[in-house]
Image (cartoon, rainbow over all chains, first blue to last red; front, side, top):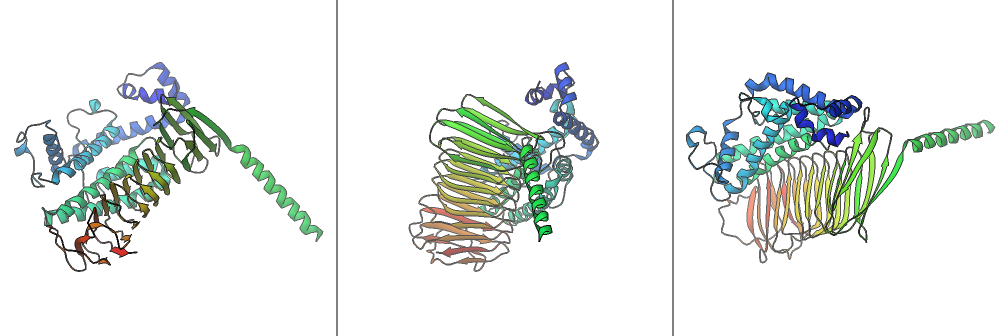
Amino acid sequence: MNCAEFQDDLPQWLEGDRKVESEAHLRTCPACHELIADFDFIRRAAGQLQESAEPSPRVWNSIAIALRQEGLIRDGERESATVTVFPRPRGRWLNWLAPIAALGLIAFSLWTYQNGSPESAGQSALPPKVQTASMSLEDRQLLDMISARMPSLRQTYESDLQDVNAYIQDAEQSVHSNPNDEEAQESLMQAYEQRAMLYEMALNRSLP
Amino acid sequence: MKQHSKRAAKLVLVVVIAGAVYGAAQTRKEFRYTVSPKSTVYVANQYGPISAKSAPGNQVVVTVVLRSDKVEVEQSQRGNRVEIRSHLLTGADVDSGQADYEITLPSDANVTLQSSTGPLHVEKLNGDVTLEGATAEVDVRDLSGGHVHIKTLNGPVTLTNVRDGHVEITSVSGDVVLNGVEGPLVQVNSTSGKIHYDGNFGFGGQYSLTSHTGDIEALAPPYASIDVTARSVRGQVENDFPLEPKHSSFVAKAGSAFAGTVGKAASSVKLLSFSGKIHLKKR
């Protein structure tokens, strides 16, 4: 078994279905061994964070709106359950809600990565909070992961993450001050895209 | 004098031996793949440069120099897709894990290159180009017709002579320089990097240059045909063009926001920043 085959088999491995070939490969491959060690570490750390990892109502709200747009849920179905931070989508709003929902999904991906698999997470585990302006819990987790896997890039990620969070904070304030301003909305979308890219790049396994 | 000669000879010997040892640690490999039109080439390299340019024929040729035995290459071809990955072994670091790639491929190939440290260089292609690197310097030139997607953290990005492209660049803190870049869509999104555009904004394109704290400078000829909107929330804006007013909900504000049209207003140009300085310059 080579590394690619082992990684194909990874979901089963993480769920406890461990083949003899996989175990043999793991004994001889330091890279895959390190990967599994990372998963174990993240799984343990995530277990301690589940209670505090309540997502921001804004994340759910954005995802709900995007799902409504896609027709996956009906309008009004969860209207009373969500906190309306943004006005109802209208015109160009429609263009940028999807990226925000994507950001939520990326946050969810991080959480999934931390927990091994969604199935193993149980009912009580929720995606991490998407916070801005300061270094949030998931930001610190991300930086810890970067320190472990690519220490030479830790400083770059940390500095960029702080800058991006400041960008989001400014853009959010701008939208709140001028909810109908298209350019403010566009800037907020761009700021979220920056953060999404940063997370995506850090979590991309093809990079170190 | 004689002692000097001896020292020099010793020094040369040391250099020769060191060079031989260094050379011996390096490994050069070459892979060749025969592909059909519109092939896809994917290269992921943790540390080190990747350079790709077009060559006549229907072959993808990948030459890689591995800097040590702590890095190896995994390669495969499935149908019309070629995939190459550097695989780091235990103990590999940014030096010993480095691999230098040079790729030649048909001009219609679609290329995805990833390297944390780069640099990444692509030239003379017509297919889609996707480049991704954290600190990697990105240099792209002489492309036409494809989608160009670039993502970096602090790696600077330079595009030269890119025509008819859908260009999307996202860089957190790397400076972005566009020279002669035109297309139906040109979008640059930066947090703290500077954005510099030098071109004529084409005819009928949509250009969006956005930053948080980075300055934005756009140079265009007097004959440019643009519908421009510019605003810096806390920074300054400057404009060298005589603008015709336009009907818009956008609020112009002297020194911090302007909007208007030049010529037939064929292309839309949006320049947005929070605290960066924006300057629309006449060339």
